[in-house]
Image (cartoon, rainbow, N blue to C red; front, side):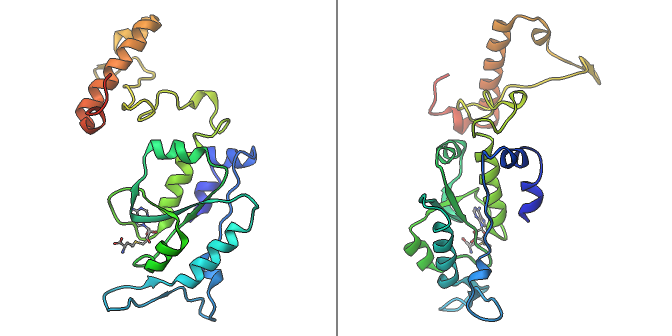
Length: 218
Ligand SMILES: C[S@@+](CC[C@H](N)C(=O)[O-])C[C@H]1O[C@@H](n2cnc3c(N)ncnc32)[C@H](O)[C@@H]1O
């Protein structure tokens, strides 16, 4: 699952430039039986299977020991704190992250209690597994690391970076199906363009995400 994401574009370049190193470890490799079983039925009954604590603990402890530097543990779960751009900025300052992806009906509660990892959710919906959630975090954090993006795709004014959604962007052609690029963007007046973009970002945020603007003054 991870290969296609890790082997293209910005993530590939970031690894080639040694900006980031990603190590994938399969929890199943820490199963103790010949079926490589990592899950079992829930005590008390109910549907689905639950991830057993043994293989997850052994795997997490193995990964922790791969480097002398302590990794910040993140348990991926829809029950965690919601992942935001602010969280991505915070995580991008860490030297080492350990992302723990679940499967099936999720984790035995003792994984949550015993590992003490921070619980993070990528949104209010339920994925089949934590791999996609881990990829969302990797992808978001890597683009914040110095040198990961070329100048041309710098994240300066991106959505959420200043509490607003990004302003409208246009490229060639100047006219397309009766829709014209706003005159201001062709004016060459950079101060006026910056002012227009800021205003547009505010309008767009008010319309699409009033929750973002509520506690901020722009
Ligand atoms: C099917 S989900 C389990 C959901 C669990 N039964 C619940 O209701 O909270 C399987 C795994 O996918 C991952 N996952 C699913 N949705 C997620 C989300 N929104 N954020 C982060 N991880 C998620 C978690 O690692 C989870 O253990």
